[in-house]
Length: 473
Image (cartoon, rainbow, N blue to C red):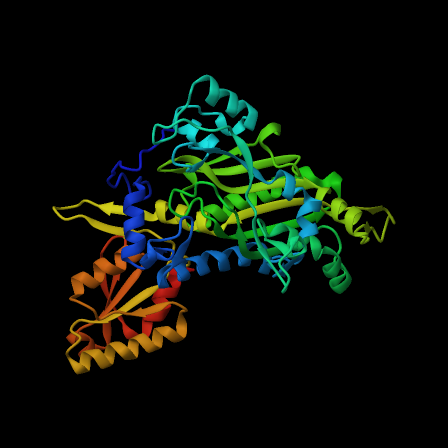
């Protein structure tokens, strides 16, 4: 049975591969070590926005690159796209986002603070509130005289469109209003015909995109889990409608395999079939890959069968011919779509939560991130034992430059004593630390230390790159 975990709980290392921790520790580590910062922090912050520091950028890039390698580069029928964030406003009218991309909003009538009604009810113990209609929520709030977190009366529950709007051009009128895309999928559907005309792919084939999306969340919360600006990694996989079930199963298996490969704890993953009433208007079947976060079991990634809804709507409203003609059977039809969708920020959070370890051996507590080597921001750190000894420093720089030619992410670290360097590299998840000492000057060997075990061995400088490569591939 799953249990909800309070954000104030604390946990110790349970085993080498299984740990639970609270959000406060992850948020603290993320800021202290340069993974994630609050957006606009020096001005008090802007809710629902976060900036990624040097290590956060590397971690995000590694996860994103791994996704592209898994789902695009290694495939023979996948095309990568980068579409515009701003699109013609008719796109969102056509797809139903203007009318249906809404959340239930309720307002404190004293403070005028606004909240997501389903979140307030869930926090009050109504576990299935997210599946209720706004009218059902309103009836519950009225009948039970439900109060705001400040103890004040609440107004009526109403719908709130989550799309963020802006204006283009020099004239500010209704015709100049455009939206920041709430999903990357529509850019793919709008370019379906362009890809068909340019590359003439045969079904089945996919178009993949990684890019920013924006949602005006009523109550952004839980660190980088629910934010207003985020990055999506999505595929629209075009198929004949008769093939949707086997294609859906294929991508479900591929997504589960990828989740494990980037270091997310598979024992905390649950595949949840979304019931009819809770699915998006375009979906005939949706699975959420939910993760056991400290604040509860919530959505990590999604997999949807969007049928031919989007292409059919765009064809109807734009007049463009979006059918596919089978060269063998001459059948003409609008392709159906399977959509694997992954949020990069949620992936980062799940990876950090899965990797966090506290080694309580002895009196001191050692914190480290058990990140896979291909996901960790740095593969190896290089240090001189003493930074004020010129010969040691020069030899260490030679080793550093040598490894930089072999591996993408190698870091130089000579700040503080060697013990502090080890602790710092442990906390950011660096798998190996290489140290050059006085023996290195004599016999051309180095010390290499393993992050997880803290064991150290000596190895020839000439064999170092091969030794590391054998352990990260």
